[in-house]
Length: 222
Ligand code: AP5
Image 1 (cartoon, helix red, strand yellow):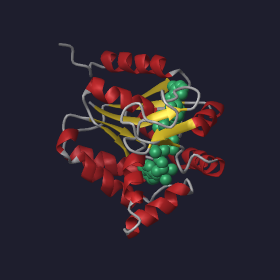
Image 2: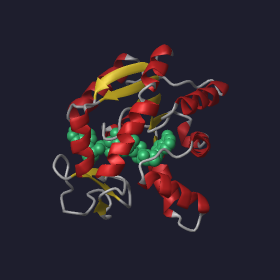
Image 3: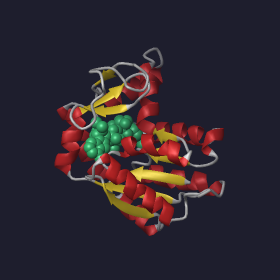
Image 4: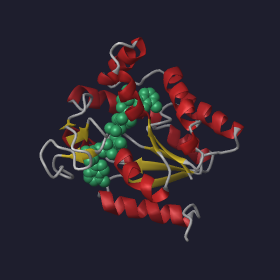
């Protein structure tokens, strides 16, 4: 099953992908997570460049991101499928992804569009916390870790993301509307688009998604 998760920052794409990857037995490929790892290497000029874009809420240039995604998709575990979260974000990225997948005859099955209202997105991003060790995702009100500042999954430190400040959040939303929202039309034209409400609570939305995958014949029943 090859899935793309599309939607504004804070729509809950990562939260759902983290839950569904085990159920669907496919890897969760988040360009944000991969780029945060690249940005950790302060010795590497690429790491410094990526960090600078990300902390300002700017998009990392297409050529860098496309290369990273192509490499990740060629790994063995992506052969059975994947959830792409945060990619593509521009039409150029979408076209390059299509070309790469078509050349191996493995097109996208479904693009999930998480339509989410702005007040919900703002509340979620300002309260988000992530584990800097394993990437598990929390929220100070909606989903706090059991012990304050400590990850339930791996015991790592749970902190605010560097780009979850007001200025960077506003910039990410502007860029989403300018560069990414148009991909809804792009995926509508290639008949893979399904729209769900990102405003639903976590479990409700998970149920909606599982029903949708089941209806599409993408879940294999034993
Ligand atoms: P990225 O990491 O992809 O960030 P984003 O797009 O801004 O998306 P988020 O991770 O903020 O949102 P999400 O929808 O995953 O929400 P989440 O599940 O965490 O990208 C970061 C940066 O990397 C970009 O700004 C850019 O610089 C660069 N980048 C990445 N990809 C790129 C690309 N393709 N091209 C160029 N540059 C790229 O949920 C948010 C919060 O809400 C959490 O606290 C969660 O606990 C809570 N929550 C989630 N769902 C629910 C729910 N249903 N009910 C209540 N609370 C919920």
